[in-house]
Amino acid sequence: MRRLLILFWLGLAALPAAAAVEVLATVPEWGALARELGGDRVRVFTATTALQDPHRIDARPSLLARARLARLVVANGAELETGWLPVVLRESGNASIQPGRDGYFEAAALVQRLDVPHRVDRAQGDVHAAGNPHVHLDPRNVLKVAGGLGERLARIDPDNAAFYQARLAAFTSRWQAAMARWEKAAAPLRGVPVVVHHQSFAYLSRWLGMEELGALEPKPGVEPSSGQLAALLQRQRERPARMVLRTAYQQAAASEWFAGRAGIPAVLLPFTVGGSSAAGDLFGLFDDSIERLLQALR
Ligand SMILES: [Zn+2]
Image 1 (tube, rainbow, N blue to C red):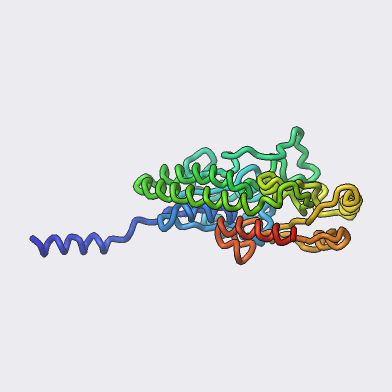
Image 2 (image 1 turned 135 degrees about the horizontal axis):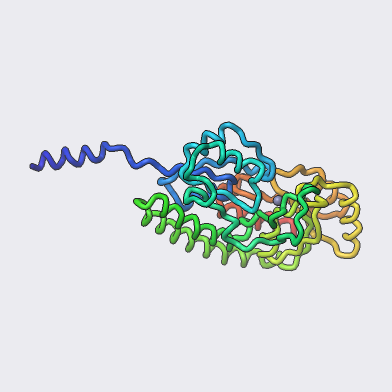
């Protein structure tokens, strides 16, 4: 009897572990969040890196292959992926990841978006026609998205629901403690006027109380022009920005030019996970961003 029991347990141990949930995340921040909440029960593939412009991604064949495999697509939404994701979803032939199904999750739908235009005019190249899509740089938004994503993982993989709920609870308490730490450290940034290359940091600025005086791009997604740079320099005389901010994927030339003329620092912020060596996960992303902003203020 005893020997039989041992054989039975050995047999169980030899069974392959249940397959991990295949997740296709469109951008690094939501891929990182899926890893935080899913642990070893998910296998996350992220479609883009911090060194790519998330507004301009091509629908490559490798993305199609990932979409065929995926049980969950974690998208940003707010039209950030309109250039490639609809094509990839349609061509994938995977019915369970289509918008409206449980296998399709959209982060920006869970938060209040900034700068939603009253009148939409995509003709002029505005890539923020549905409002500012870069919602992840307000950590309060990350918390809301985490709640929705944790619940979604539990729904599509009910056998592991308790696991996801426990991971979400642990993430929430760590994140809340980190937010309190960040808000305290970033207090000197309150009221600081800044210029940005693109409206990448609107949510970060609002959270920390920084004032964005303008952008080097005349419209979101339109290359900085000499006219726009000259107008911003003119405004520096009345109300000077203290620094000019850009992401890891944006060209340095325009912000270096402006910073040189204005006599202020040009600051590269990681923008998303992987945008700097210190931004290895979501916690590192905020630690490093705040540290770089404070450094520029000194
Ligand atoms: Zn944008």
